[in-house]
Length: 439
Image (cartoon, rainbow, N blue to C red; front, top):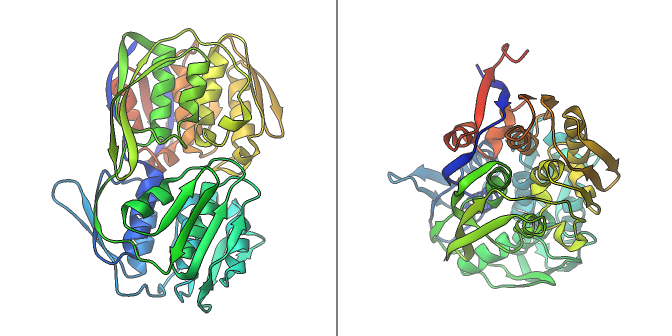
């Protein structure tokens, strides 16, 4: 039977160490770049989550060979040329997987249908498809959403594209398309966005330029093979950062091997603004990515007005921030985060409903939330199938006034398989309720 819900009781002091699983965004890129490389790519720390495995299966259907190595690594062997798949490529719940694959495949004379689950098929794809068409790609969407159909068009033309909204997925899709185009593909951005693609392209020998202005790649180019280590996912660490600040004990909660790419750590800055005590130790670098161990102490937290510049650098971590805000003193205001409405769920609306169900005072706005801190009661919340919402409310329950039941948690496996066990390992009182037992 699958896990239908969690029941989480208020916790005593949380303590111990958590090994954060591999970064989901980087794991997708390992598969995508490995499939078009000039030699095999070996990776350690690949995230074996449902989202990343969907991308793996898609690349295998296109001709890549992926094998497990005995010491926990895996090896991606590229074919001479990707082939059109015999069946639709199913990306499950992964917006990153499908959007980046659109760019990777657009210039490779592939005939393919890209699809996913019901949630993914509600998410917008034209933000990627439209600029790819200006490069010469032949792409169809269904009212702007999946299924996405790729036709074998002629060679792509390199071009310059000025993104109207900062988006790492759009930028990455165009850079991946640029690998198969003749000339320099340039993507400029109005604000800083994640730069994992640029870093990995550079680490694998591709001619890439990058800065706060955006990025460019000179094609045609093939990534070289080699060995990479995937750092721990900061977005997964976010829930334990929140847990340590809210419910830690005298000793710090320690999070090991976390990627601290500055385009991802907006939440770290925000939590420190709120009074959080967080220390970075053993700074090092893996595959062009900064990595550290984090030590987190229980802290007296206060609400803040979130600076607009930090919104894109914390966009996936807002569910964790919202529960911290509800348990802090004072008011937290988030604006300019309308992108949250087109994630795995409408995270603004779903988080607002969940917080209100636990007694918080919340004002929903088109592009964010206003949250009056002070505490949460027990109760029942519906994550609406959103993995990050589910994990955020599990953390909230540690400091709620009573038990919290969180419905529809199966999709946590898309990003953090083993979350419940990891949380229980540091003291969170979390019980998994199987199908038919959640009432």
